[in-house]
Length: 338
Image (cartoon, rainbow, N blue to C red; front, side):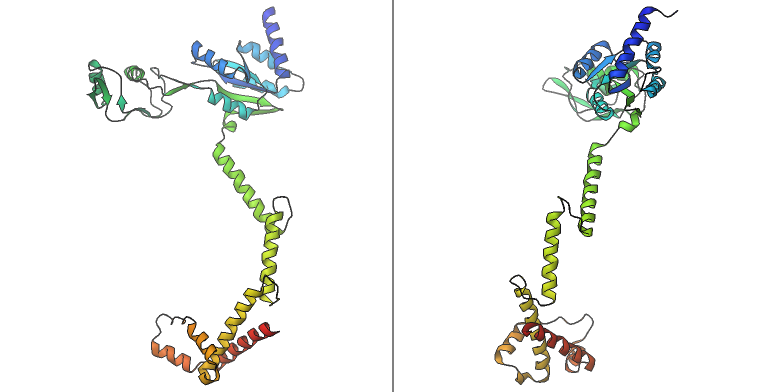
């Protein structure tokens, strides 16, 4: 027969499951009481942490109206388990739990979560047995200003290796705390969805970069397609203005904005025609035009072409090229004088 207090506790938990926007199962294995109290204090304004027997939790999770999927949380209650009730969504809850973790010394038999180093610097110990203990583990040290200083950083335990008893003792003496203690989220429930731990691990910097990249692509697409929005209106108007100026300049449509570009183009075409005339009859040009031609930079000869070849091409250009250049020059004059 089930004891009355267990039934009452299960009913109490079931009401909490019904009323809580987010419910999570966390692992509390290996957290000493003092650290657990500190974690509770740090999270008291964000979450409610409840610890009780697994069978009572499983009983409370059964057949909750509107939240039947909550029962799947029972599949993640391995080892020492606690329940969290919170208004935070699972992603914010995961981040809050990770932030609340505290550093702790390594214990014998624990697996190193990362490479463990002993840093260079002052140990605070006076000259004595500690020098021999450091030397035993291959740590270089010396005495400076009355205390033992480690002269070079040393890798002590590689990631994934088991911490030996003597190593754990030395790391503790040197105040190296490679372990993290905290609530390890296993699964969370919100709006009918079960979120496992791996789904909640997000690289915020990469995620933000993806959003910025998507925004850039969306802007480019909207501008290229001419889609007017609050964000694209200014760029689209600027683009339309530039396109209008380019078109007006191309067809020699005089406006205050295009006059300079059109006159520069006409001047260049006039000089090109004058250059063709000078090649046939230099006396036909006025001194002013001849001076303007002389001020133009000379076109560089093509690589691998001798001066004689260049002169020959200048003196006797093909007939078709002459006609084409003359047509372009006349076209430029027509653009200038209407």
